[in-house]
Image (cartoon, rainbow, N blue to C red; front, side):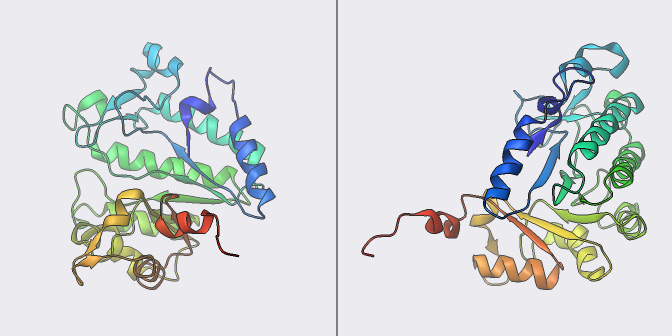
Length: 265
């Protein structure tokens, strides 16, 4: 996971050293690397956009404050901000296309502090901007996969604005992978939004990648009333959602057990 601010500390000066280190480490283990490019944060003290975006009036501050979850989001609906983000995507592709397994964007869910008109935000312009960035990424990454975490869209519930339907149709047409930040078997909000579409589009998408984050490890499956096990989450992700890849939180108990020292042998 890499934030935009860390990768572009100054305008047009990119620092990819940490990605190179992680890539070398992954290769030493005969593994592949996926980059999650963060243009939003989940803590008020972290602003994900580079300082020059925050201080130059041309970018209107570069970031907007989120409401429901703490943190900030880069104002991708602002064309000037989006242009700079696409410069970063182009630089990343020039360096890493074909060397990494893929790149993914974080969740599409967004709830801005101050309401839907904050910093010129509208649900339509945000939706269009997210798809434009995904299409641009696919145009510069020819060998590595591009994945959009489409979990929820602002102003929409159960596809009532057809954002989710259009997202999946877009992904099929543009060969963009889809996925999400949580594996929560039969969780009603997800079932009413992205999960239903992932299930219906099984076999039609180029790639489906899902993440099991730390809070998901304590998730209680509403169908069983029990905490979902590794097998429960893996089966639901693969069989119901059609996942090709699962990103597991490193705090998952089975990973902790795997790295624990063995005794008595």
